Structure formats: structure tokens, C-alpha cells
Amino acid sequence: MEPSGLNLSLKGKKKMRNISKKFLLVTLTVFFCVLGYSQVSLADDNHGFTMLRMGVGARALAMGGAHTAVASDATAGYWNPAALAHLEGLSVSTMIASNMSFDRKYNYASIAYPFEFGALGFSWLNSGVSDFKRGTQNSETGTFDMNEHVFLFSYGNQMDQFFVGFNFKVLYQKTDDDFSETGVGFDASAKWAVAEYAHLGLFAGDLGTKYGGDEVPAVFRVGMAVFPMENFTVPVEIEKIQNRSEIKFRMGGEYSYMFADEYYGAFRAGVNDGSFTVGAGLTIMNQYHIDYAYITEATDVFGENHRVSIGFNLK
Image: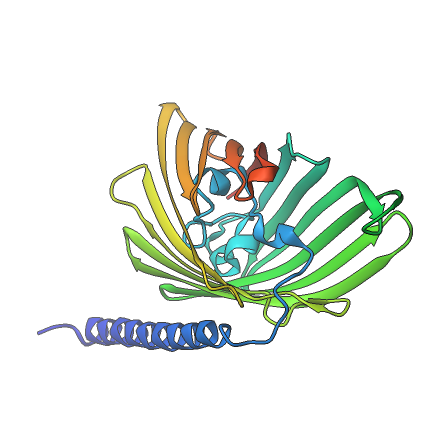
């Protein structure tokens, strides 16, 4: 006969799996209902804060930006805050963009830490343009500089094989002539370890996000990450932006290898809605990371640029 304690344990695990599956089903249903509703919403599709869609982390961007089901460090605050629950210790990530056209700049930094009640994270995104022309259709009256900031306050927690999370975000825009606008918004996300070799990620961003008198259109992402063999990661992802008919497709791949004890190298490549990406990474002592990505932007006039990230994950 099976010991009663073991039987109760198995029943408990089975019950938890059933709860997780039901929770996932409800989440998927709500997610796609909201996605469908976004087709007929009256929110304005034109908005500032384009950096909300630009992505963060050279590792993620080198894989085409298909990172909703992959993120497991401080960058998860941007990609999927539910995945912050993977953290085993302090995580810090930074990124700078170089060679951006039209005197644009784009910077990012984040920090996250796990607690008994869940993981907390904070992210800062900054973009700006220098010497932006001011004037009317027929005349110019000089130039000005513009800066935009986004602050993300993130939370993620785990329930069995299921992860949930959300962001509260603050938006701030300022020009050098003392004009400024502020706003707030929310993101919600989930992640499910479908199997040891596959993860599913869901993200609904900019839910009710507004700044000034403008409403930022919501964005919805569904991603799957497959680990077909050791050291290989293959993510795929689709994205739908509110009020836009097209659906963006992203996919990528990563191969990492250990070339010395606790030293790893990685090669990455991907496609972001038709734009090619490629990159590489170095992990030192299983903790410190240096990553590089070369990307071509979706809008041809913006051309190509480079992203470099430095960070660490402590256990």
C-alpha cells in the first residue's frame, strides 16, 4: 500500500497543478478578450514615449526582442515583471545605445531583489533628442532639447509553476524651455513553466496609461521560449498594439558555451518584425554580464545602431 503521507502529498501537488491550469485558462481568456476589445477602442494611436516600445537589454534585443518568455533578471521589469520571481539574489542591468541617428539618445538601468513576499524591481528608461527644430510649417524659430523618462515599479511572485506580476509606471517629459508633462500607467503579466523545456509568457502593457491629455495605446505580447537542448534558447513572440491592424512577429536564438571554468560566451541572432538583429555576450564567474547587440530599426530613416549592456546577478 502507498503510505498515506505520500498519497496526500501527491493529491496536493495534483490539486495545485489543476489550480494552476485553471488560473492560466482564465488569464488567457481575459487576455484575448482585452486584445479583441482593443480593436474597437477609441484611444488615440499617436503618442509620445516611443521608447516604451524600443526594448531594453542587449541580450534581448540581439534575439529580435522576443523576450517575454525568456527574461529572468532585472530586465524582466520591462519585458515581463512576473519573471522577477525567478531571481535568487540581487540583479542589476544597464544599457546604452550608440550611433543613433538625429542626435537621439536612449539609456536604461534597473535593479531587482527577491523577498519572501515576492520580488521587487525598479527600472529607469530615458530617451531624448537634441536640437529639435521648433516652428510652424512655413518658418523656424530655433531649436530645443527634449527628454523623456519612464520609471517602472515592478512586482513578481510565483505560485507553483505559474508566475504573476505587474508594473506601476510614471512618465515624465520635459523640454529645455520649461515645458513638462507627467503621467501614470500600469502593466500586467504572467508566465507559466509549461514544461522543463518550454515557458509561456503573457504581457499586457500600458493599461490606462496617460500623460498630459494623451492616452498611450495598450500593447499585448504572447511569447514562447523553447530550450530544445542544453545551452540553446529559441524564443518566438507576437505583439499587437491597440488600434493597429498589423501583428508583429519576433523570433531569435541563443547558443551559450563555457570556454573556461565559470566563464561563458554566447552568440545570438533574431528577426524583429522583419528587421535583422545579431549580438554576443560574455558571462564572468557566473555573475557578471557584458552583452552587445546590433539592430536595424523598423523605420528605415532611423537606420542601424548598437546597444551595450552591463549587469550582474548575485545569488
